[in-house]
Length: 181
Image (cartoon, rainbow, N blue to C red):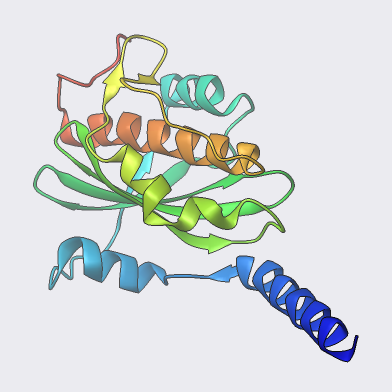
């Protein structure tokens, strides 16, 4: 009986700890940029959003995009974006690297929700590698598998990936992925 109670308490502590660990900073922006560009140390640049950009953002996020500019880092055809989107109630911070017209990497930098943190694991983020934009609606050219219990976090990651691809086409002028305007 005592052994069973100890086991139950231990399981409860492990579960409580894992839920508490879901929230947090997994990677700082500086670490993300270091991993993305190596010794590259150029500062950020700003892309000022025009009306067409804001309309595209609204189509992707299904709400008005707050802000007039987006910061990014660039080395040739490679761009890095640090963007936020709401999961269920709180923002999730993502780092997205785009090379040419396709995603090279998606990383969860900070997760603030109580559920859905599974999106930070490579089994999920690796699905985005190689994806591009397809068509006028700024959809991804392939589907992204969801995670049970993390639906809203998955949707946030997908929206951010789509927006980063769109923004990268604006910065690099890559016409293969450029949307019809």
